[in-house]
View 1 (cartoon, rainbow, N blue to C red):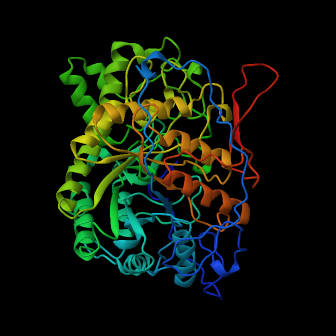
View 2 (view 1 turned 60 degrees about the vertical axis):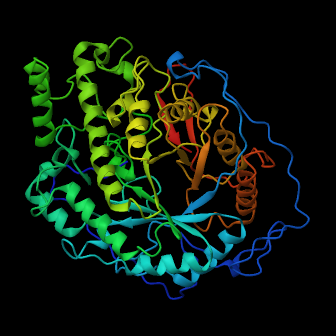
Length: 547
């Protein structure tokens, strides 16, 4: 869900964050703990003590809902897997604007109170985005880590751990983005000179959220390649925080695409370009991607295949059966379709391999583990072509497993696969979607590849039903169990009494290996981020909405 623009010169401008009159003021991302009503299940003594829980109100056991509908044979577990109950540490994502445009820690006193609350709840640590657009905004190789240094010290004082995301994408234009942080100005300047540095769709829309992987190895950024720029950035981070790596800074998540995920920006939500559950569009029309496709087609002995992407793949908001490429017996399953999808997904895996190779060279021996994020594209999962996954770069169809190659690539570098949509249930989704089936497939892929699996929730959820679904997927009943879970996201809503009570119970249950299900099924907080399917009188309804 990236920002898309028709003109490469119409980039968004950096907006200054407004100063608040009171530094303790509750913002969208932090809370002063003194302003939280104390719940019966949690008492805070100080920032370094665990919560003592007295007279906890027992919540009736949750009936775990399961969707019994058939999932494609390829994606079913071949046999039952032995259940293991083990501790799953929980991390919490910090607000996107944790560090300000000026490079300082945002509302440090409120952050201190929030970290105190999280520590008392038993949370393992927090995650923060180290935005390229903030750190290197003053010019090539000019880095400012001061705001992040303040955060590291604060996290250390509370006895928490830190996951740091190397965020080489822009912030803004996606679900939940509460601020705007473009790529560094000097990078945007190069993009304005050469619009083909960014991903482009068939109609010529330019997407400035992330640099096109087509120019990974070309010196297009003032004499350096994008991979070299990312490497220099990570190396400078290592030098600045070498004393904290492996102890306070436990994990480095390496951004590899839009939203930090290894994928193409196939479903850009900004400006209404794409709406759930559209199939999206292929992003292979910048000159560098077109040159690569042409060369691959010539090598395959069919020059005509290199003239561009599929002509019959439809538009962002269509459904598979509306297109010639993605329909039941469409072009996706022809020799040409297989060639194109192998090339398109192969370029993405190659991109991830290059960045992770660089990251491993930088962080090897520091004691910090590496992770990479894969998007949970669950809509149209029950169809034969899995159209939305294909446009995003995951060659996953009824006949082809798209996640095992990704898991193997990550495994080759010793990188944890971080996967989203762990909180979603099939019954909350459109008929053609299956987040539960997708999660099962990814769990099996990581098990087969021998790589660890960590998870996140895709949307902000505070209800017991979502937490209970995470508890269920955290276990190893089918494929890998979760090695860690990162909750999205810390904000004032999380600290509301009922939401906080659910969160504390969830963290406790994850520490016990997912055995405790004392969480309410209903969404008592009236969260507006459920993905619902609007069923019309006829069964062919194709509308979806965020209710």
